[in-house]
Length: 512
Image 1 (cartoon, rainbow, N blue to C red):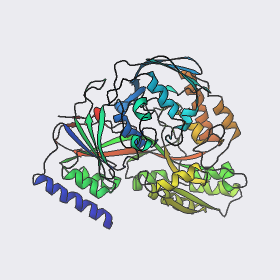
Image 2: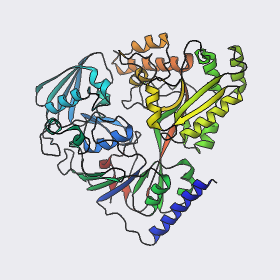
Image 3: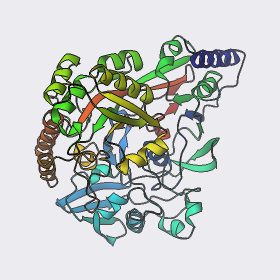
Image 4: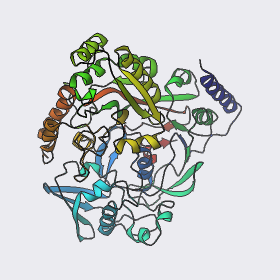
């Protein structure tokens, strides 16, 4: 056992002793959460990172919402919507809703919100904003969007776009907007001390009814040992981001409960196919796929807390193809394919990736390098913090990298246009196609799905795009779907069923 793990276990066991000696429990109407990622901003459009969107979903509402462990799309600030033609989306708004400052929620706030998305100074949802041609508000409770192109998943994205109060946003500078949020959500933010905590109070006038838990405190604690010492000593009720190497020890502790949740996020390797490069040959890409022992990665690195993936979309996502099967580990066949492609002696390549974003991300990348070496491919490892890595991806710096993804709209068409469509800045496609992979046949098939709105027809079309990407083009090497691990205080009467998107939605957590 490494020194780091010994210190981590020691911190937890010392904290448990403190708990046993009489550390005070949290009040029944208060919930304290220890999380591994701090908020970046309180501007709901200022970050499209999952961790930030999840926090914003407690302060703000979207026109629609995804509910609980199933992720079912349900009404929120809009009671219903219509899609009369390929470019038109008509939303009927909920009446009687008020912002935290007492202002009435109306169509003017929705129009203001979506027009604001196009401003790069305040928004990371620029593509969504620029996809809209016009916004009409025929009355205070009706909004009609006209999009520039057909967007079948437009409504599916409405839970992630949080509506702001037009009057208070326009009357304040952006610095204050990013620090003091005013939404319609179930909770009001009352204090934010960056790096220490965020405090929330229940919105007693919430349109769904006042939340049962009146006070919530979010404590960002990046260091695992500190986070779990806080849990074991009773300072926090629930923690996210349980390290896989701690799972077996934690489940032995009767004062703690560990919760496993199959996650939607797929971890995969993105490959470029630049003409003249070794990976331009599909046989080389297939050889690299066959060279990776994913079962061993799951068993030894993930400690069993992952499931093998044969594709990037997860089962709830439109486009998931149940007929796709993962290629079995076969280094001998990998060597044969490399020889056939003219790379019997291998080649050199760099594998990039983050070292602080996904579960065991750096360790997975290290394992991939070792597997490739066994078939003659000399891969150099280039892992770095996510704050550096992700901008490099979108700028097209890396031709081979490890990354994770799940589609927030539950429609893989949106993801395909981001991840695998040939990069075109003017058209706004391929923004996350960092390797600049390009396949004309795949592009043509994907483009043909843009105006398919019939659910059955769309599912079939996207499944074929997925099959072509995975079996013919081998655009990606899928590794596994993550399993999210949480730990909580046992015996406090907390009812917590994690969501597949990893958001902590406070109104969904109950405490006796």
